[in-house]
Amino acid sequence: MSLTPLQSQIQATLKSIGERTRFSEAILAKKIREQCKIEGKKKAGIALLDLEKAASFLEETENIHFSFMLNSANDLLVEKTETSRLLEGEARQRRLKSEKSMSLFTNSDLDADSGKKSDRQDMRSNHTNRTSRNARPARTERKSLNINSNFEDWE
Image (cartoon, rainbow, N blue to C red; front, side, top):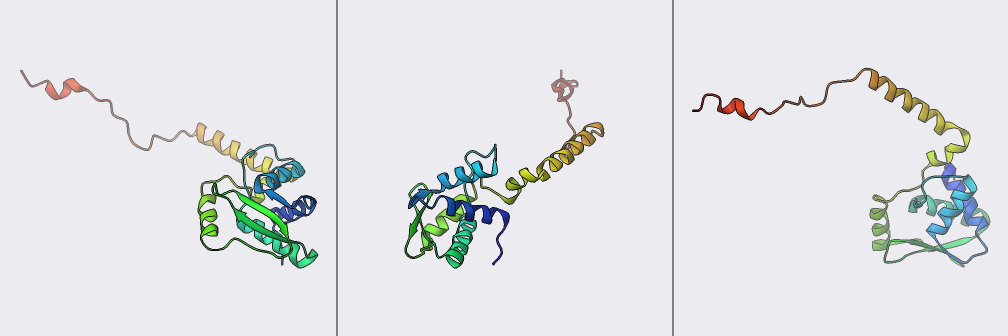
């Protein structure tokens, strides 16, 4: 099973945070930000699918088991247990639906260390400079409203 860079970072963080038996997704995300030296995304969460894949990898390789629970605010709680227990049914669907409106960590967030992000920002700034020089007309033509033109022939 191959892991993405984000999943391998989650897996390493789960191992390093192992002294605690129960912790929230926010603590896990904070540790990932610290280890990867990510400045932004202070409120970013972790996708459930990435977390489950990293936990199942740890279960296969190092025999460490985790259980996932969801509280009423759709916050994910992770607990180190004797047997693995993933989210099921309604709780899983609730979490996946709430992730659509959440800010989540992605693999591109981890690329900031390798300089790939700065290249993208350079390309983006070149694109904005190019479009400002070649200003396109507005999407819809703006016409001024002259109220008196409708009533010139009326007396």
